[in-house]
Length: 341
Image (cartoon, rainbow, N blue to C red; front, side):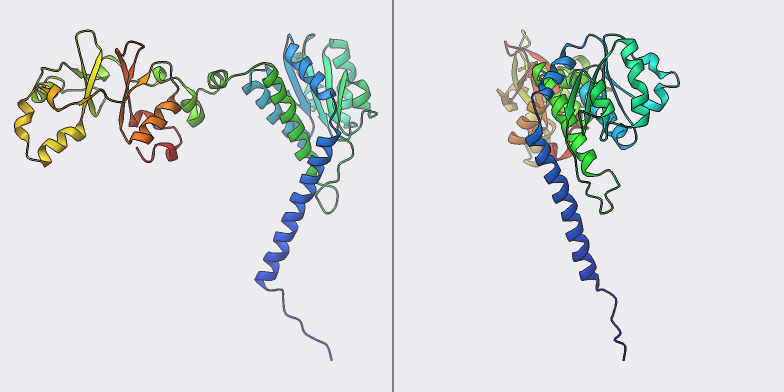
């Protein structure tokens, strides 16, 4: 009599899937470790060629290697090396004009025999560009045509069929990163350099200098110590960029104190309305936290988080007021970094 077996349970399917996913990672991690041990000084010499390149670095590859090449070109560009991706099939239909003598072509191909890449090799030589390859074998067509070949060795794909590029593209990506970051290190690329190439987004804002985002001029409310609170708020009403603080300065514009909207609210909460007609110097917070001009926005965020303040004056070396950072100016910086402010 035949035995009827039920379908695998959901938990069994999940366990099998998890085991497979972990095996993929094991295979790819193993491939990375083997290539790490196999690396030679060629990668250092390749980095020197890229560092000394008088033209552009042209990164090319076909299929998945081409996608890795686009990422590598982007990483090089963002760390100070003039780099562009080039599709090899488009290259032989006119885009070879993008390559000049003095350029370095960085070609990615696991086999080193990719037809579209091999077809480019004579043209690269005629143009007079230097050729660096990242490939499995230095004895391949691409490896033999290269001025320098970063040899990866044979790589076992994580794909059970041994067909879909997986471990090989992981290795290409990692070796490309190693090369790009080695060039960056040799270039003595700094955080400020990085900020220059990343002016937008959360990362760019954190690396920017405070003077790039601070408020100045009519965007800041200022007062002298002998002005009354009421007079200050009345005289500085009207359309202006909203700021939750009045900065108290002397005749030399030296920062003496700060009076915030929260301080004003506390006067009303404690029924001390009569102090609205007292000098602001009597109710201000003297010698407030500040940040020097030239500091990074990330430092301003840290100060505001640590002391739980919403306004941070910017001063020069003589503590003269030059600007103000309001918590709302930090929109675009990672929200988790300003959540406590």
